Image 1 (tube, rainbow, N blue to C red):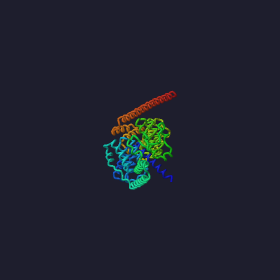
Image 2 (image 1 turned 90 degrees about the vertical axis):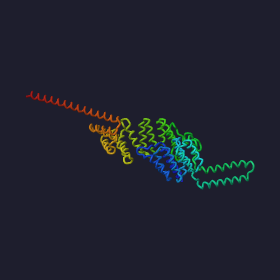
Image 3 (image 1 turned 30 degrees about the horizontal axis):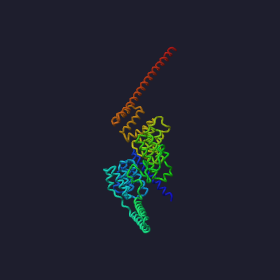
Image 4 (image 1 turned 180 degrees about the horizontal axis):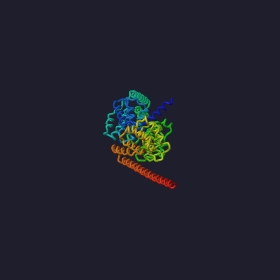
Length: 486
């Protein structure tokens, strides 16, 4: 009996974390689906009035627009969808995240209107419309929101309201018969307020407490303003990782934990916007601890550490992302590129790890020509001519006119000391539009190789001539000794 609420709380935590992860900017990378196509599928499903939760959720995972957040809310609270209290709480949190992400964008307020329409709250709908009129009066989304009407309140709700009204009116009549004078004068407004409060309570039984706040700069959680934070869980800016609550707190307060995730991400994004990549990294490290199974936080941590110039720890963060859920092709390519970008000497066994990572990707994530290209980069860095020949041959089949393909083939020709092939590849590089700087580098290296070959040839000629002269002298000495002996 106790496991059901726990499972429900755990499910809400997972949903909140996935939604917050998508808000943070999970960008579409090499292997990620096209966010525009997913968004179009979501909008088409919403327009047809069919269940749009799956396409809208996928669009949110791979998109980064507040419009994706609004579409997710619209799919969750669509008129034909069964909505639970958990769904309403999550939808409200997503709507708040959209407003927080971009307060001057109308989509977060449209999401609040979607929720207001579903719960049948005219007051909340009016509040979000006021926000839309203030933020974007001429936006098409505002015009669509104006046409919204609250969903008809179910009959059972009106029956409950009527019964409550009858009960309180009966109580009022009974009190009026018993009380006289001053007592009756006091009782009338008290009982009237009770009736009014009961009716309002049944009307807003499913409304989110912070949803009808007209000022987007002030958030309300549990009936009190929270300033710039959404969660009751405080963030220690000096040590964000220490702020992450233990698992039992997360299970007991899933909604607050979801707000806590939003608070951390808002701080991380603000630090990034200011160019403080070190501080942003601390917040992403806390998010990686708070969501240990999701690849997005260590991915962003890797990016921030790379921007801060800390390649060693950036590699560690990227390596951590590879072992989590939601890993994409870009995580593998970024990891390999960062390892290769480190200065010499590379740690022992680094090549074996890179080869293992690329072997793991092969057949599981379609990277196209980028996979053999990465193999060529590894082969070049570790001077593996055999591996370079294999990947260059593969690139020659799948992307023969790519400048990188030609550069790898040229590097193989240089390794084989083949100036004729190298010169032909330089001409091809010019033809496919390789930047002049790259062509110049190839020409210098080829010229150096030719000079070295010429120097070696001259040296060999000199050595051969010296050996011949020495041989002639030795033969003469031997001949003179024979004549003297005779």
